[in-house]
Image (cartoon, rainbow, N blue to C red; front, top):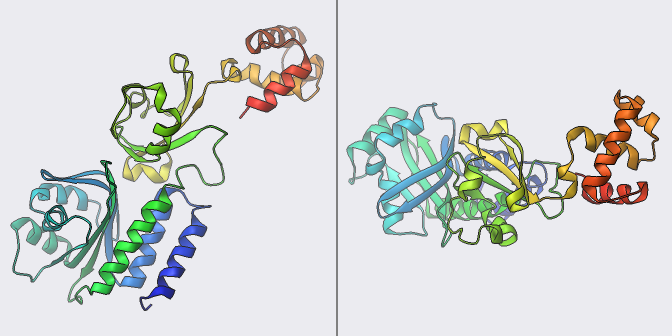
Length: 324
């Protein structure tokens, strides 16, 4: 497909449509596959990284049409990566590598020859003041043609727009956040990948001294513990999820929201509360949940005490307001 405004408009339109159905990983994978057809590359490596004078640090990554050992192999020669060096020296632009170019390092030659990479083009979306930035390295193999300036510009624009679109896809597709909740993606070490700015804006006051891209220590302790966690000292509920598609990239999804009175109920009490708020009698609730009527009456009293209500109408109002 030829490059130009028509081609790029199609890419943007389809990407925007996919933000309603795809998570961040799925959106990135689709975009890389689509760009490979448009720009004509055979394989790719993408993810989130930090560039600094000391080198490059990868925080999450995935590959397309590359062997599983690619990333580990790259780690052995990271300090000789000419593409990273170019982007550190001249930030804000793309970087290219040609196996036949004059400037070489042993590491680049080894990487290129091991995986058959003839021509490489890398683009990164810089984020001022942030540690992590999204990058995409695209690879042509064998006797590949050179990268044109038009292709370099196209890839940079695509990466910039893709990085922005992924900020809209932190939640699970088809499941919008509850009101007031914030969802973020972090890596296994607690580095914020997507959604961290929203978390800092909406809930940052919970940790007054928190700065930077690392999660507060209290949250870092939870990232490898899937499930719901109640933090009463912070008036906070944290849901930790490890979506199967993200495991290859080492990402975790955290959804944070303020603690409500409903969160103080046990799972069984929430079931009873919902049934009572629907207008069912104690006997009907007992039959529905397989409980003794006396047990339902005792749990009803506990529910009323915990929620601070004293009648069915107030209970129903609170359940409708706070229940997920």
